[in-house]
Picture 1 (spheres, rainbow, N blue to C red):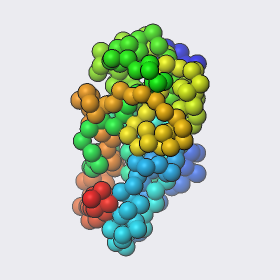
Picture 2 (cartoon, rainbow, N blue to C red; picture 1 turned 90 degrees about the vertical axis):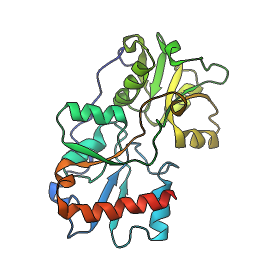
Picture 3 (tube, rainbow, N blue to C red; picture 1 turned 180 degrees about the vertical axis):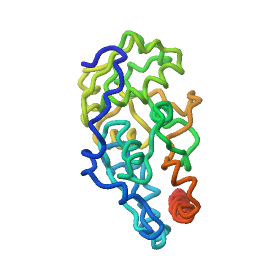
Picture 4 (cartoon, helix red, strand yellow; picture 1 turned 30 degrees about the vertical axis):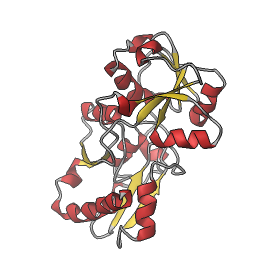
Length: 246
């Protein structure tokens, strides 16, 4: 079990996590390529359907696209973008603001939706009226670094995060909740359906019903955002995602 309100469990350097690729492999107009890294540790999710639709329908045109699962650790994707090992990441508002506070020059350029996509799952019949009931309780996560997601959400709800305990259960955090190893689990829009399809049936407090936070956003390096030569490739790439949404 992690300590109460422990600091973010930041992963080892993203260079080692992404195979030590060079900054020179980042998107360049001449390469006509974009590498997008997921924060979920997998690409076998419903959430990324606009990408697969766009790819199947040819909406990306001649852009060479890569969708990578990335490590499940919350800040790994943004670090990979900062160091040039990926071109776009998809952090939560909490993680994005943390990176900005640390001086990492990233810029948000696109969102798939306006509302907070993060939810909290509870065993059937144990959903509280509000998240304030989680004070003194235990929340299970897929990574210790996800506290960068949950802590701002809980604080927004008026929860004293020093009174919340976390358990890092890795990829089986949903099963850990089902087995009673915690009082709640972090979840999100696409994951709810994915869990239900595997027999994990929970009650939820939905972020979109109360949170004032926006959804995750696509972020790129500030230097790329200020480079007019990069505007064309990123505009065409993001147009593909938008068309995939439609």
